[in-house]
Length: 182
Image 1: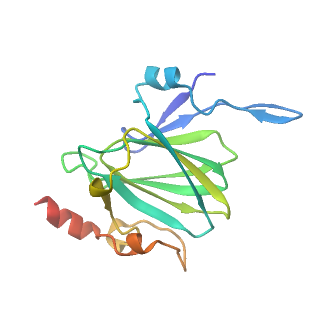
Image 2 (image 1 turned 90 degrees about the vertical axis):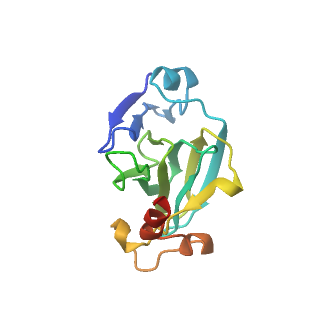
Image 3 (image 1 turned 120 degrees about the horizontal axis):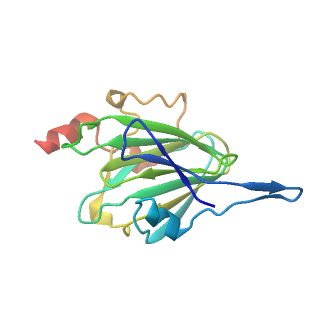
């Protein structure tokens, strides 16, 4: 069951399209096959993380600095999310640009977000479960965040009462991030 790679507006961020096989019992799908991912040019993954969120929860925008940078393969197994990747690589021609993809349990797609991107999502349904495969282990000292509600990022969350962790509410703004680069 080979995967299909779909380009996004930022060529390094990719949609990974899987396949489902339906019958009277439901469906069957391979959610990950290392040989296919490696053949497609994606890296090895070292850890899986699972989150569950209620409708209106925003998680992120998170990343880890070098040498603990992480690439993430994000899959929504229950519910739906608005998944966001922000290019935070100053040397990139797409620096500051955003990719937004709808991931939902009814479609067998994942989003590949390489190192050098801040990542976050909004839960669009209750009991939304998201699996992240990551390329490096979590490291507290390397973890960084952008405030997902920062208006200068121009992300339309389309929420009146978003639910965020205290850490995400207090995260740096895009302008603070830019000032630290100079």
